[in-house]
Image (cartoon, rainbow, N blue to C red; front, side, top):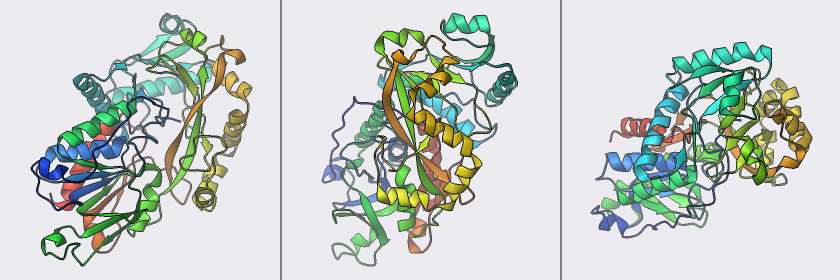
Length: 448
């Protein structure tokens, strides 16, 4: 599961709420009105809001976030890996944005003084039949312009990772790790410094065009979109951009968009190495992915705090923000299990899915996967760790949507709204590059 999933505790964020901040920034606008409102205070929404506010300093922007703090879900529950762009189809948007995004991420962290580690990654072949797939990955990475890639021998593997065993490995020295929630909060600071407003605890439940001004003035009709939250409060704006992650399909349908692609949540559970065993791992260590299955397999991921995560698996989550094994939402469960696309995906990957469920329940089953790469790991060295939930977009045929999906729906609101319905992994790595693409799309659609 290459979703960047994990848990970051530091960097609590206290936003400046909407009010007179627009006037303080020299931007005249009635209170509660904005030129563009961005729904979603995750890393993609914040990066996009930041990019737009820097490009258009004369406009008034807001970010609407349903939680008390920013970047609490996919952006704060990810592996923290700065991916290099090896896996993706050459020429694809994902490949281009990942390679560009990784460079921008390192530059941004240097600029802001955000700590990171360029600890590298080994993709390790432990069986002879994996070597052709490993070499194919190397060729793919070269085509994607990934820096510094090379194939290394068994002895070279042990020089880099003394406890790792493998026949051959693909060495990606520019892969790194960072705390992505810290990065997302830095985007929020940039956005506010540019005059943007952050509204937390604003869970969007309704969006519509209105024919009436809120204050009865002609000037008020400059802001024809009404966005209401679950508490009945509202803001008005000229244009709306939705980067809602796990809820992107539901918010899209509110404005008249097609039900597909649907979001089906997959939970990724991690194990962690006990602190006294973290010396076993220096950098990221991944298995060679099996192209028959949609996820990357269990891997070793060092963290900025010195811990080492092992995993993740990939199992259906019964709640869109369900990070615990027993978390359950009747609405989320019914939405997922009533969708024919999910059942078609299950049938295509039945044996793999059953294996994932088995490994989720029994540590020994996951341990066997880990021992193929680091034999010294024992059951006494590992314990259950955090989890993340991936917003997996599916179509009705059970296909994983692997690219970006933009939508505007129908009717009068369509010309004024942009839904980012799928921003696939590695969205955190690619966030600054994705933000540029979204900003370009916004400028073109809204004729800014």
